[in-house]
Length: 93
Image 1: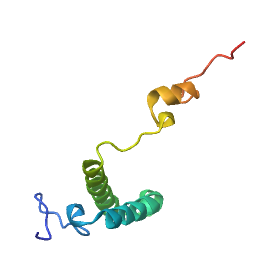
Image 2 (image 1 turned 180 degrees about the vertical axis):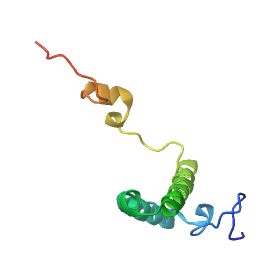
Image 3 (image 1 turned 135 degrees about the vertical axis):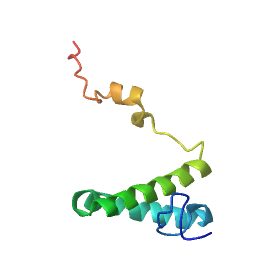
Image 4 (image 1 turned 90 degrees about the vertical axis):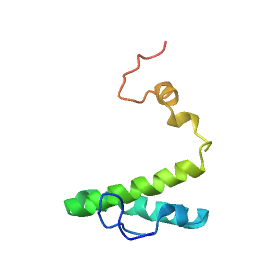
């Protein structure tokens, strides 16, 4: 693999497809931990690189785990049941 992607932008980090499952999870944990500071304080170029890397890592995770468990509370229906999504719920009598 060369150091450039199809658009000619320099890639950061190892191709996610070459990481084993444990390395992929470690990379995901790191990028999610640094997300907030990157959004608030990084340059536009750094934020763009962070976005691209996160999409690569998350895409690889989803490719490997197409049937990952989904918590009921993390679905639209689950959010509605707990009164989320900005909707107001009438008090129940």
